[in-house]
Image (cartoon, rainbow over the protein chains, first blue to last red):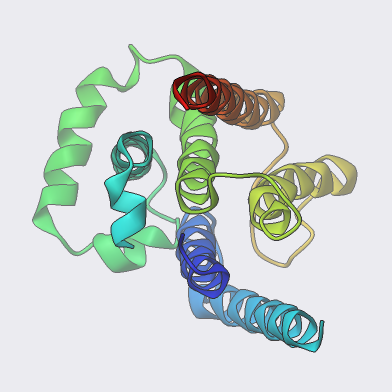
Amino acid sequence: MLKKYIKTILSFILTVVYLVSACGSIEGPEIWLYAGVICLSLIGYACLSFYYDTKK
Amino acid sequence: MREILKSKARRIELMMALFLFILEGIIYLTFRSTELNMFRLYGRYDWVDSLRIYGESYSDLLPYWTKYSLPDGLWLFSYLLLIDAIWNRFDRSSFIWYLLMPAVAFGSELLQFVMKESFTPWNTGTYDTMDVVCYTFAVVFIVMIYIFKFRIREKLATNAEKIY
């Protein structure tokens, strides 16, 4: 059985990759601006998720 | 990671996802405007120029939606396949990952529909019903695959019970 945290990390990496690829398909000033905001939000989500899981 | 690759169904999902993701990228690089952000990264390569020259001769033959909507559906479907390969189950821990990208996809279309004009100073795209149709198909296909896998799992469990 794959540990839940490994699955979460894999899903997180995958989501960032796909969101960055989606940023590539639009016209914008700086792709890294989108990528930065998205990554920070996802890191925030992952941290909160781990926090609540360990608290249980 | 080894466990993901061990299951045949997961291996098929991984390969399908990779293929669809590459296909989506090729459609974008071949037929779409060079103003897109991805061309900052790939625009300098000769093979992209060759691809675009090659694609020009076929551009008129392909329907509009295969160039402008299909890649979006392939992108979403490929993501959902990978998430399904990782989690294998829609439950309390995994639902956020299953729902995140469909929410981004449908949400962006909804915003484009509501705002009519771009909601940022630069062009982030325009609403297209075919985009929504392609996203919907991606979700429907992943639900079908999920149900199919679920039924096989149930059947295997029943067979195992019969044996013991």
